Image (cartoon, rainbow over all chains, first blue to last red):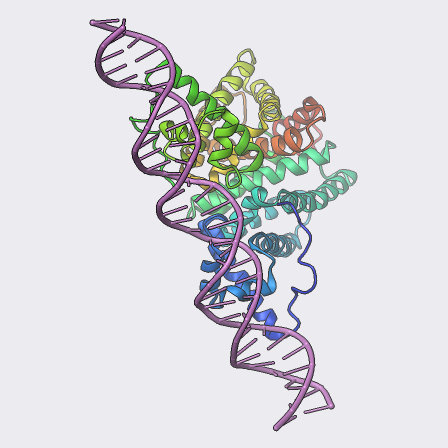
Length: 206
Length: 206
DNA sequence: TATCAACATGACACTTGATTCATGTATCAT
DNA sequence: ATGATACATGAATCAAGTGTCATGTTGATA
């Protein structure tokens, strides 16, 4: 447990054929682990699903944990790309917030397996899980600080805000993206955005 | 997996002695599962820790999942009691929100094992996990709706708000209550509360 | 103090699945 | 064609831990 190093050499495929096989295994593992959970997903089920022999698995991964680590990285890359695109043409930080939240919920719904894998990584290798969130938090924090600087948002503890917003998104992704897999997501994102942008407090401004 | 029925008869202790033993096992399981995780925590380690024989375990639980289910219920009861007390003398919904958040973070820090057990239950028996959150959400929702009614908070989607606030609390509990187990929690709770009460948006009222 | 239900024991039979390894096969450069 | 390297196979090994059960023990009750 808790060796979050990337698979060291000797395991990386050196040809195109090898890379393809590795991906087949990774894809199969995403489905198997995502659906059955880490404990239930056996290496034999994964290799069967990938249509390769059991031994082939160990050509590319040291063990089952290794695949999970790789899947967490995969999720990080894909989600980051997805969010970057979604936020690209937002005019302000708050607009980015709204668009990002919606994009996240959509991503969760589109990738329930990866989503679950990341959550479960917490119990298989806490260090990758933590790194995953730390990475997002770092970026999020910077974005908030710069928005503060430009006067777009009220000053405040950027770290706490970043983690709070991530937590909010994760839970809503779970509840509405995955559990309630058919409710429209836009109204959900809007309602949550309204709360974080304007706050709960009753006021009589304008 | 996914049988969230409470342990049926034949397993409930009928004497005081039995109840005591059951509790010893539950306490040991909380520590073992909380620290090692569900997969690593063996029944033999749990019974060793509880200082009872292996077979005794099966006098009170059908299997390892059963204990975990029971621990989730235990967490629910304790947390509910803790929050109720903490909120008791709050003058308004918003005050309750601030106090509740702080109390939650403190609870998480004081009970990291139970906290982890609940999170892991998601992968062992999704239905108890869901029930756990649904219960909290239901209450939360009612509180928000009644606060809306009395004009204490702005109208909005109470369901989304409840889940968003729970997610926010869960993540902050994890990050600051458990990972950063020595930072003062009051400032964290205040910073998060500020965001949800007043919002991020820059305004020029007063 | 005899009886009986409840509780407790711990050795072990049995299942399950991860990992290894001896043996092939594919592909490509020369 | 030949040799070398990478890739692929799957049966066999091996460890681990679950759940059972035949055999005690406790303590309340009459």
